Image (tube, rainbow, N blue to C red; front, side, top):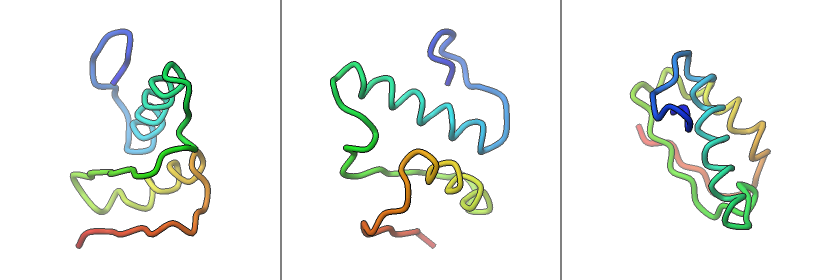
Length: 73
């Protein structure tokens, strides 16, 4: 979602993932925190075919972690 227009942005799953993380990061920044401090992140995909592309962008922001990760079937 574009935070200025409150409209869903056009683009593929990677473009939308970038925007979602930017939006969440902006909210956390105002609260004095960051995405790096997130304890739990739930991601819901309409199609699991998009998982690898979404995960590629997610990892750019959150990095590789030893935290438990689970993918629903």
